[in-house]
Amino acid sequence: MNKGKGFVSKCESLLRKYSASNSLSETKKLHAFILTFGLLSSSKSNLCSKLATTYAQCHHASYASHLFDKLPQPSLFSWNTMMRMYVQIGHPLHALNLFVEMLHSPDNFTYPTVIKACSDLSFIDVGVGVHGQTIKAGFNLDTFVQNSLLAMYMNAGEKEAAQLVFDLMQEPTVVSWNTMINGYFRNNCAVEALVVYNRMMDEGVEPDCATMVSVLPACGLLKNVALGRVVHTLVNEKGFWGNMVVRNAVLDMYVKWGQMKEAWKVCLSRLNTWTGRGNEVWDPKSSSILQVLVSLQGLVLNSKPYFNEAGYDKQVGTAEGEKNSLSYNENTFLMNCKTMMYLMRKPPKDFEVLIKEHFRRRGHNILKACDAYMKGYLIGSLTKDASVSDKSSQNSTSVGFKLMLAKIVPKLFLSLSEVGADCEEFKHLKEL
Image (cartoon, rainbow, N blue to C red; front, side, top):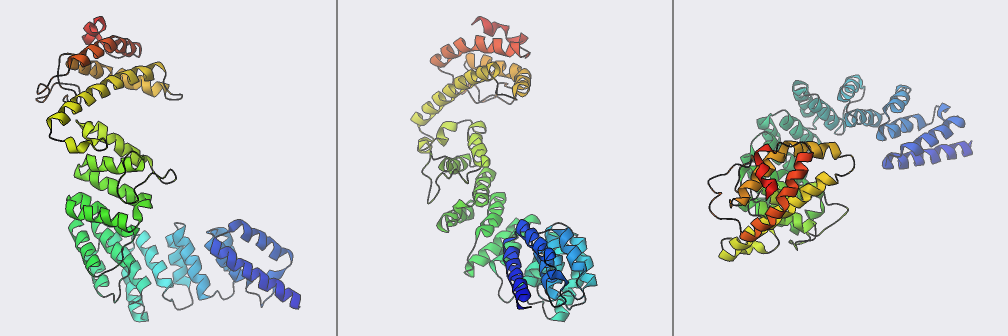
């Protein structure tokens, strides 16, 4: 008898461990062991209840519901765990159905789950009713309940209701502040989002990564450069730079401002070609493709990418800087021409059709640009279809550049012709 109790006690201990670690495979093995030794048949055993909640923690709905349905009197903890599982796996309606069936009085763990289910289903009227129940039950001042109400009202666009709940909070947590900041921003109230953030900082609340991710987009949208730079500095001071989502939010902010140089510097700090600030160093485990793409934007979306190179921003507006910028653009264009020919000659595996079609469509404009540059028009001044603009004649390409381009263009003409590009208008280029 004592041995049987020892088995049950050991199983219960293991289930607590597997529940905490969400270990589904180990739970299934232990379940098989329990069935083999008939331990579920004991009327005094809580193993069935613990198995049900463990499966629920592991998000295995079918096993969890099967065992839960066998319980003669499920505990409030079991009801709460089952409802939370259904919300987390994307079945909020099942959670609400359980709430209606529940025989126990809800507690402060029940209501946040039910309110989240109402929010996910956009059942705002039901959510308001649940809010009323929390007031009657005396849980309306519970922080977990209040935070779930904030999220529900903000998700429904009910900003005034969310603000009322927030104002009644005795001690808002950082989650509460973040929900308000992010909620206002998502409801097209970026100004209000920054007002809440400033109030949060004035009250000495310690921000976290979610705070940064919530406030940086608002700074970007409103072009609030002063606050955005302060937040960027705070990101470094608090050690949040290691978070990829935060880094991408910083990049997005600078891009929205149109400050490609700053975005470029941030990206270069991730590629180890810029010293950056604070702990902005390259981390191969966490750096993202977005940072590389924004780095490329520094070249593609900028007529003077020279000044985005590390340290060269100090030459902006100087005669030497403008001279170096023109030379940089000329060399870049020559290298691009060589790269295009190489791609057409040796396209990467599985990209052959894509590359051929791209150059077939763009070949005419590429040759049109080459023709304009051979005539001396300024590199980077043409329109999207390679037409001459008002800025095209402000400077002239160098003699050295024209000589080098004259050697490349005939080969480029031949490559584009081979992929089917429309080259008829520029036949004279192949005779250079």
